[in-house]
Length: 296
Image (cartoon, rainbow, N blue to C red; front, top):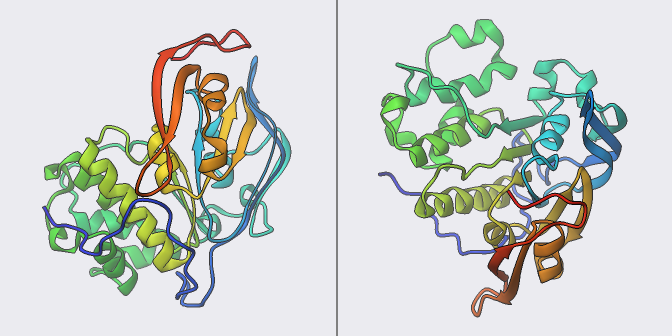
């Protein structure tokens, strides 16, 4: 298996002021969530969420299933419209932009994607260029420089002609990450990028995200189920409970026994990694939440 050669230690890297995806300098794009509500008939999902993510931040969203994490990403990507409030991406409402215009600003890596039988790694990564190249441009053979860079950045260039369905789960996730990078945006939204991966590949994907965020000056928001990974790799945690922001801040301040109990429904202890200093959780057992919901 091809390896990402540049070492990345645990913990967030500082924002880079290196060349951005558009060839300029500086960081990513602000995301402003202002009084946002969203739901379905009889089932509210988000209730009055206020959140500002500044350019270049690496933020992890945590919380129980159904608390609104993935919905918040889809709103930021312009795939959904809020029923109350607004979401702004670099000052613009993504839901009011065309799909191609939004895709030039923000890339969303979904939790799962349907298999594409017979498609090679190169062909899948090229799909990320649709917003820029359009349908006619996509008919041309060959990779552009952005696709080549995306494949090289996640260490999959040597697999370019391999069928995607021949790869392992961890390898496919890196290819999907390359496809998202090929959109060449300043904002990268990742919905549970480590789901179904073993521990080695979870760490590999997260370390790659941290490195790419620093190298490209990206704004990264990722949904993570593993609070330990979120505390180690993100510089900021936003915890959702019942469609509202329950906690927001640096992991060292946010990750507490109170967060485990009140947001995740788990009794447990929190320590510190002796080398990196990030919070380490020791969950003991599930407990009822105050509003009657239970850990699931």
